[in-house]
Length: 400
Image 1: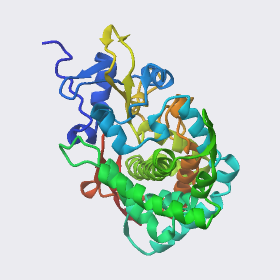
Image 2 (image 1 turned 90 degrees about the vertical axis):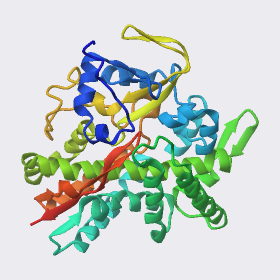
Image 3 (image 1 turned 60 degrees about the vertical axis):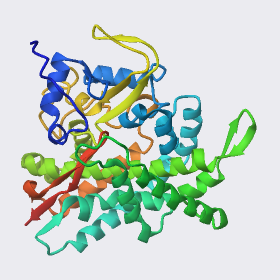
Image 4 (image 1 turned 120 degrees about the vertical axis):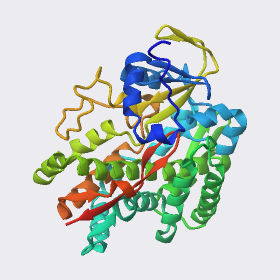
């Protein structure tokens, strides 16, 4: 038996997902191109491979999905999930991304800071006097729910419901390998009604922007198609905007508990918080697994990957690759980070990256100012398990 015969990686396995880093290190060192025979997918774990495949969209395509179970479900699965820019290659990807980018301008994002800070302080005021709270449910997970709701124009009373649908669409029970299409359908149904309201009553929000947006194609100038473009794009912003920051804040709560010296450094020098956000992204990527469809035969690390294969890009492993980062398993908020792939790379770099960084920075600044110390009840914490995102559903903490 070879030394690599006992390497088994399964993105659906709860036990592996709880702490995949030792296994990912073995994959980087011993099997940089991995093939899972049970689920029939390939996987790369080194930084350079993840980066290069993210750029080479012609070979490693998103047009058949960027989630493993959707790619393997074929055209029927892709039709159920509807299209979004995550599931497109150029040229349509570029046209549609440019439309969404109009609403994520630096001016619009920076204008949100004061409101986000006031909101964070309000959440912390609600916790005043309590000696315990849930770092995710009572604080970190609420921030993106409200911010994305503000951007889209979702009424306050509906935002928690939409966050629950985003969680439900991605979460899977142990042993499940199917995407939750029902939750996504409910989200589309909700936004369909809101789109109709915005057509009658426009507002200063992203949904109104997209309702009025025009695109150029072979037939001339037209509005976005509701079913194929408008609603899927709105649902994407809603789900992705919620999950990225909620997971990042959950990891912040846990890692700063496990590394009190790093937390102390941030309390004593808040100017380090922006860099700490980058280190958190590198160390525990909120979305550690992406997938691509292989459009032609390729040879990688001495092996052939046939056309039609599913390729998994383990972003979470890339962030711990010692070929790219010195002492990568050390969590260091002062680390000089030259770049990471935790918010995507190439054409699918996260459209809301600036907003995610803003929310996370302000959220950390405010909680550290109010609670310089906390202890996580790890025994009663629960993870979110999916094939693409990784984070915490509940993270109870004790404060002093």
